[in-house]
Structure formats: C-alpha cells, structure tokens
Length: 542
Image (cartoon, rainbow, N blue to C red; front, side):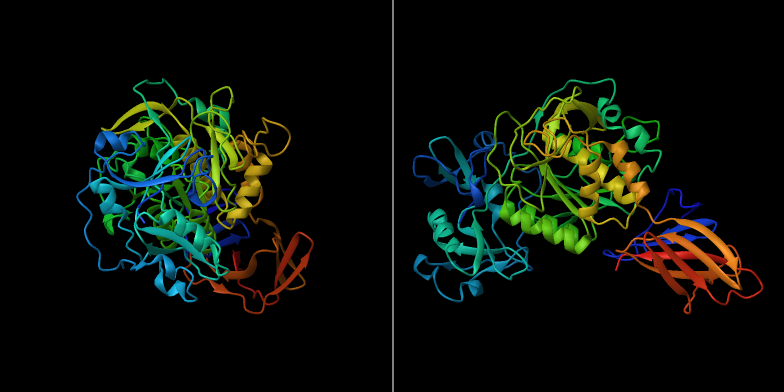
C-alpha cells in the first residue's frame, strides 16, 4: 500500500496476485495495492532455425573441447554436471517413416516437462553441426522442437540421429503443425574488454534523471536475466537480488559468483540507485537469475518458469530472437504474467535476416551520439544505449563493455520502471507508450536500424504517470458523497470507506452508484452517514 497526495507517485506497491493489479485512490490520498542434438541460429539462419544457403546443408555430430566451443561463442559451464531429474521425461525416438502418423502429437513431450538432454550434451561438448556455404552452426542432437496447432506449449519430438533437418522439413508440412525447428545453441552478445569509464553516459541520453522524478522503481516488479547467473552478492546488486532458478538442473539459484556478461546486464537493470556506491541501474526493481547453457529449449523453459512465478520482464541477451518457439514463450509471458520478453538485436554490422516475432522485442544498440552500432533488420523493435556502457562486473567491481547484451537489459529496466509507475498497464500498453515516446532517429516511424526509435525514458515515464487513474474531485451533495475519477474503460472500479484515518476496517460501499461520462467516472455513496468518512477508489485489472 502507499499514500501520496492526490495520486502522486509513491515508493511502494505490491501485487495481490500474479495477474491482477489493483489501485486504490483516496479522496485526499491515493493508495495502491496490487492488490536430434542442437542447431545454432545465425545472421544467415532462415525461419525456424534451418540455415538458408546455396549449398545443401551438411549435418554431422562433433565433440568439442573448451577451445572448440569458444569458436561458436559458447563457454563451458562452471556448474557441476547436470543431474537427472525425475520431473522431466525423455522423448522416445520416432523413426522417419512415422513422422506422418495421425497421432504424432502423442509422441511429443511438451516443454518444459521434456528432458532435451541439452544440459548433458553441452557439459560433455557433444553437438550436432550444420554447415552451409556461408555458415557453420551447432545444435542439440536427437530432437526437434514442434508447435502443434491448438497446443499451449512447444513440444520436443525425438528423431533419428543425423536426420534432424529433414525431420523438421517433413513435420512442417503437417496440417496439425504450426512450426518445427531445431533446438539451436545461441550465442551471448558481447565482446568483453577491460576499459573503464568515469560515468554512465547513457542515463543522460535517455533521460533517466527526469524519469526518476516519477518513480525510482518498485520491488514488486521483477526482472529475470536468463544466462549464467550474475554475481548475486555484488555490493551494488545484492539488495535487489532474489533467488532464481537453474533450468539445467531444476534447482534454486541462491548464490553465484557470476560472470561479467550477466553481471554487467544486471547492473544495467537494477544496480541500486542512490546508495552512494558504484553505478545506478534503470530502476530499483528486483532481479533474479535463471541459469541456462544456451539451447532454445532452455530459454523457452526459462520464460515459462518466469511467467509462472509472476516475473513481468524477461531479458535474454543471446541470439535467437527469431525463434518461433521463443515467440510462443513470449506470448505465454504476456498472457500469464502480463509481461514482456526482450532479446538482443545481435552484435555486428549489416542486415540480419531475422523474422520480427510479435511477442519478442528485439533491441538494437546505440552509442553516445545515437549512432546505430549493431545489426539491422526486421526484428528490431527499439534501440537503446549499449556501446561502451559502464556497469557492474564480477568480483564486486565495475567495468565497461559494448553489446546488445547491455542495450537489452537497459530496455528491460525501463520497462520495469514503467510497470512500477502504473502497474495496471499491460504489456501492449507499455509497448505503445514506448513507441509513442521514443526518439525517432531514422526515417519517420519504424525502421530497420532503430525500430520505433531509441528509448526515451523521461518521456515514457511521464506518459506512464499520465496514464494512472486519478481522483479529480470529492464533494458532498444532497446527502451523498461523490468521488470523481479519471475513467479507464479497461479497468473496473469500486468505492471503499472507513470512519477513521489509519483504520483497518475499510469496507466496500455495496450500494455505490457508478456512472460514466466519457473519460470521467463518478462514484456516489448515497448513505455516507453523519459521522464523517474517508473514501478510496479501487481500480482493478479484470
């Protein structure tokens, strides 16, 4: 709960349930309560993770050591060997001739209940390898990912060894299949270096200081960073860090020394603001790690776990933003937790032939002069600073780096701040706020370099503040108490009252009369009594 004068922003708010948010407004005060093996995608990868090239794809299996994995942007996990999990089922192999049977869906196991073997294969360095004329990719062997029509989740289908690509193509032709793809291994988006900066230039560029006048962020909004965990006890992160989850081993993550990639990202989201220490994130929200090795199936399971646990913002600073499977997960996050999934727009130069997935928000990188510094293409929705940013690193320190891996968590931190300012906003409403407030740097409207523009935190925060329901007047008239509120058709309203300030005996006015006139809502208590009352209005997301 929070109190402020006449609907001014407050410093605390809580969620009543993971999908319903409540605002309570008082006549003189404003209160809120809430209430096969693996294929890797690439710049040249076509739809559904199958490479496009002039030469036919050449598929083999390989075993790679640390050096070999590094060539594909993969880092061996410092965690113990993945344990067998009783809550995961290994799909049986479906022979090629059975891929056309009517009840193929019965052979598949929905994620995240399927054991894809991704963790064990990654730990042992066992991969599938696809080579085209211009590209070489790694994938998770022995399975493919399939989305059956009318099924809620993407499923795992076991297929014959070395026939994963042809299985994808055959299964795609079925009328009961929405899409099929390989379980590709993706890459983190960063190029680490040891340069240090004296300040965080990005805050001035996006208007963080003006945005913080509206809210520093609220702890009821949580952001998940899907990656090897960040340093959870970092002096500038620990106060905002919640326990996370290990998708690979199915256990909680309560402590981790971290890697720089995820620790830098965590600082961009939620390094503590105003603690006289180190750097500042975008907002004082909560952050948590979700551990993966890099398979699409692991990312999918991470988003589902986050959604099922009420996390409203999920950051994945890896390639893979064109994945059909992750798009399904992004939609699940929207529907289940009213949340947003953001992914890296991909480092490098030139056009990237990624699909613009409607439930994944791809974030490009800009520098201090608002120049684009990453790949461009149809998948870009917004741009944010990420070039030579300064943030938290492992060992309790601070450092700089460049990448869409950091523009993406900055975007996520801004989204978390907007949810903090007005938690009744849904994901699509927040995206519209960001579109309408973004600094349009390319051709008018959307473009392949900046998407809808470079995020403008100051303007978006002001728009979120203006979107909050607010009491505009209170009066006694003809024996009735009348409260007038700005009306929002997407919310439901109720009138509450109590006879004493600070009383715990608030009661709903069951005979209140509600009437609307355009953007004005009037709530009338026909029997306020003679002893005097305090009133509040509850606004709830249906």
